[in-house]
Length: 77
Image 1: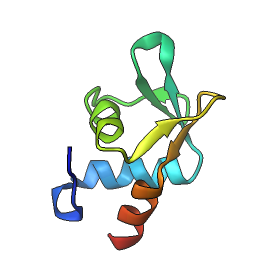
Image 2: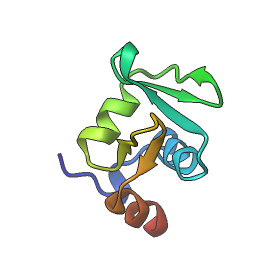
Image 3: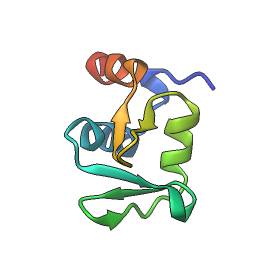
């Protein structure tokens, strides 16, 4: 999947900023649900979409991290 800055929604950008700030985890037991500040993100499609686009990944600790592509895209926005 190829994502450009123009293809990102405001919610996508907000999620990327939250991931960059270290506020997110991806729950492997819940099918990859994104947890922000301890609460499940209501849009269950955001995390899989951003992961498939190569913008976020799960660290060994379960925290969500920006990939190099995610950093570059967020910096460009």
